[in-house]
Amino acid sequence: MWNDLKAAHAAIKDRAIIDLFDDARADDFSVETQHMRLDYAKTNIDRATRDLLVSLAQAAGVAERRDAMFAGAKINETEGRAVLHTALRNLDGDPVIVDGIDVIRGVRGTLNAMAAYATQVRASPITDVINIGIGGSDLGPAMATQALSPYHDGPRLHFVSNVDGAHISDVLRGLDAKTTLVIVASKTFTTIETMTNAHTARAWMREHGGDPAAQFVALSTNHKKTEAFGIPQDRVFGFEDWVGGRYSMWGPIGLGLMIAIGADAFRTFLRGAQEMDRHFCAAEGVENMPLMLALVGIWHRQVCGYATRAVLPYDQRLGQLPAYLQQLEMESNGKSVGMDGQTVLVDSGPVVWGASGTNGQHAFYQLIHQGTSVIPCEFMVAACGHEPELAHHHDLLIANCLAQSEALLRGRTLEEARGKVANQFEGAELDRQAAHRVFAGNRPSTTLVYETLDPFTLGQIIALYEHRVFVEGVILGINSYDQWGVELGKELATALQPVIEGTQSADRKDGSTRGLIAYLRQYRG
Image 1 (cartoon, rainbow, N blue to C red):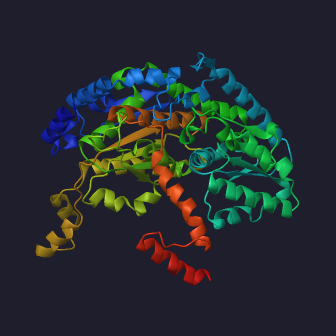
Image 2: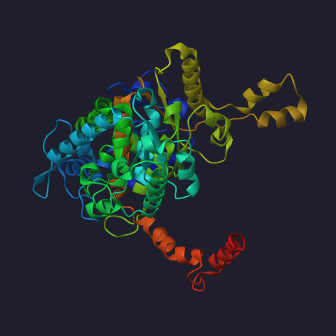
Image 3: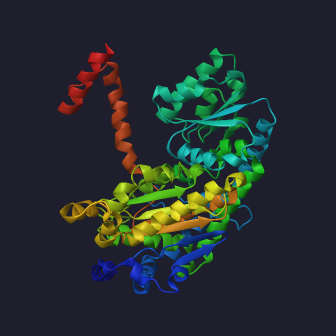
């Protein structure tokens, strides 16, 4: 199947995407679900290629693997775990059995406990909440909190993730310790960055008149560690090992978001994700949005060989979405070994990056339009903003979004460029100046359009990308739900700390590391 796709790409790689357009293409190469439309017509995928891609997914057993995941099978085979972040938003679906136990009852019980606590905090004198976590315990809720800022009617929410003291110092500055709640998010309650920041926050609170015994909450499964830290059990919200960190904001890791927007809005957020889950399980073939988004990604990365993918939300409040998707996609599918323990024979996941439009247009779009590498772009835009009194702003935003994808599609020929500057230059100088204004065009993009960025829609978007990662992982034959690649650096950092502190020698380190330590010591005394 891969060879067939490679042959298809070789046959059409120089074809102009715009030549594929007829009266039917825009609708035929789009997928719709509730209040959302994914357009992938501006790619070089034609019907024959799409059929090959769908067949690839069928041959890989995507549907069977999907059904196994939702049913609670232990598809995280390297760790022997189920993959059930979808259960966290299963508000009214069927039971899900893991090791003979229906996990849905526990999920809903935890959700109700979260809602009761969030309501209590929102009615209290608490003015600020600090979420201390890292990775999935930070990127997801931080992104969602910014995205849903129009719905904030609770305490202000702050995030601390970096072990760099500057981060927590900047967040604590100006806060009142007596009216601040601290949420410590760490499944094991041993994550070194998180616990270092938690100890610093606790010392700050004590020093400034707060009460850590009453103003700290833990999102963890390690009750011994949370108790030793001084957090009573009624303020510890746990989650099971079948919830991966980067998939965890639907449960207790989302507590800060729930406090900010309220339990009802948080449930609406879950409803949006649940709706995308149902669509993913029910829609067939080209009508399945996560499947088609994944197949476009497979086409661009594994078949066409494009190494990166730019995520470009034309929505200021989705400014942290590219960073969130970096972890979701690159930690999930940045693997070189398959489920069978053998080397993967095709490229694995792309480098994911981006920024909100229109800021990006004045930063890196130059490379996207005229650079030597093709970078597939994924645009997003809402039909309606939250500021009706500034509707002209939103009109301009949409115009920019659609114009960028059109420019990538059409480009500008040398002849057109000459016409742009013919009244300013002539002869050889005209040709030289015109050459700088040529756009190769024929560069692929997708566009996701949604009605408004509300809790339901945000839930849909995040679940869409989660399922996209799942499909790509199944097709590549890898486990998207472990992350052994983050372990080695952590182990070496732990071993290096006493060397940095000066209590151990650096003699056994490589020459480069020894030299850097020696240089750093000159300034540390």
